[in-house]
Image (cartoon, rainbow, N blue to C red; front, side, top):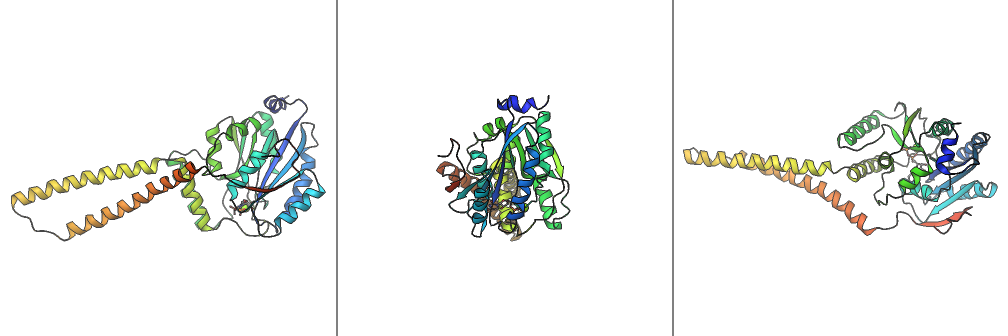
Amino acid sequence: MQNSSILQKTKTDDGFKLSVIIPCYNEEEALPLTLEKLKKLSNEWSTGDDCKSIEFILVDDGSQDRTLALLTEATIADQQFKVVRFSRNFGHQAALLAGYELAQGDVIVSLDADLQDPPELIETMLEKVKEGYDVIYAARKSRGIDSLFKRKTADFFYWLMKKLGVEIINNHADFRMFTRRVLNAFLNFNENNLFIRATFPIVGFPSCVVYYDRPERLAGETKYPLRKMFEFAIDGLTSFSVIPLRICSGVGLLVSLLALLMLFWSIVVKIIGGAIPGWTSTVAPLYLLGGVQLLFLGIVGEYIGKIYTEVKKRPRYIIQEKINFRENNESK
Ligand code: UDP
Ligand code: MG
């Protein structure tokens, strides 16, 4: 009876179609196992009569290794596998977006190519959709496998994001499932600075979180080294919160008030006649103010940079090739 909720939302009466989106960047080591596992599991998902078909959209984000060859092989063996090849590396978020834009499904799920997002969880997520939820966020139970540094910086990041007014699900990356109506709403966000995990909570609709244990990467190396992680975190912050700008104005105001008090004090000392020009009181505020000004210029610059990339409205990714797409959105 509950199954009808997806069907009602998607206006189909003979079962729903599931789209599985997987961004891949230099994943030759992990892909063979991942593809095999997905194929095996997909038979289980489609045995029920509500899931009528499945498509796998594998986005090759300009890999330099054998990723494309492996993906192409999979498309020849099985029409369920569809491949999009970018003209160069556009990044994980752009790859996800391309998958979302090309998805034909009534229910869509995205996950990593390295089996760190266990595909077994998809069944549980589908159950949640059947219960009536439109967005299911998969979040890690714990960060046990991460280094102490990564754990602490991640905790700090989620804490800061929340403090700055950004709605974000703790320890949820990009493993999520959602219905067609959520996707349609999401696709109206035309931002160039992509930080998809913070966009979905803005879209709304009934949502829930399911928790899972995140295993180690199956093979290969993380495509998010420390530098990229920090860049991503700063991007997320400045794309979703203007509070840092307000902090700049607030501190600016405070410092100006203090400066006024200093001025007042120095005039009083001058009048009383005890003015001994002090080196410390000249140099210390100079350094302090110089530092604060530079820092704040930097923060303001971050936002100007964002506006700059937004107004240019460059394409968020460029597709070089598509394989096995036969639907009417082929020209996209
Ligand atoms: N990825 C991508 N483009 C990039 C970097 C990563 O498509 O520029 C893909 C990658 O192949 C993987 C997913 O995004 O499927 C997440 O990357 P990774 O597993 O390296 O990140 P981590 O799990 O270490 O945070
Ligand atoms: Mg991973």
